[in-house]
Image 1 (cartoon, rainbow, N blue to C red):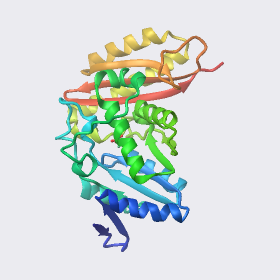
Image 2 (cartoon, rainbow, N blue to C red):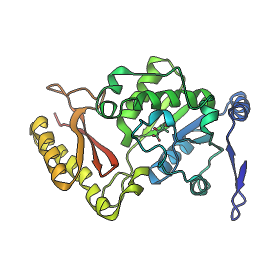
Image 3 (tube, rainbow, N blue to C red):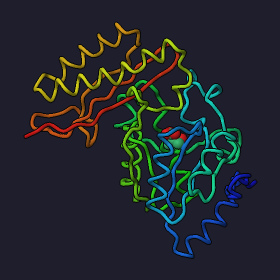
Length: 294
Ligand code: PAF
């Protein structure tokens, strides 16, 4: 299927079948194109569009995937409710120089009823922070990203830093398995009040939306205090208490090393404050990377 923008006449091919993607990619590879790829689950917002801008700047061809990946949702997660807004998403993509959108069905990606016997696991990351709170999530992400890389064969893939642990997982997978893909990242895009953009923000009711920004505020206070020399362990306990008072159910607030998300050691300078917390059934994550001065 191809969509034509009635105003500009621009064509946006939308491909659902892996074999058709392979044919295009084969031609591009032989023509020496540099393929930049942005994997998404759709419901696109400014954060995704920033990834696209980066991809446009880095490649001679830009490919976007829109696929809500069942393998990264747990039994109690929101797979069925996850917003699927393909028409709106395609409308947004016209503004960018996207060469095609890969929007496969679940059966196309996981033939035989959504099952996938093989999977990629990176044990360190899948058992900490989001991995601990969402068992199966990172193996699901790593496996589908690997599949998408095998299908699109990008030279470059662009990910958002809001999902910092996911970015670490993808980098680790690419390094460990010698995948010929350069991973680039883009800083978190925020609403005017500071709330990190996320496809899940749309689930928040008005009251929750006004509380949600507290997550970023809380991380800002942790970062400021640690920069002033306060003990990170004390600050995260304090922040957890603050968030709970505001109405969040807190999964974690931590300060870790940027490099590998391990617990900081004396002398570490490149740190990151990360948090995950729920408002009702909506789970929000955010982070702020920061450097300590000498
Ligand atoms: O960040 C996301 O939207 C998803 O986890 C990804 C990377 C597209 C894999 O399904």
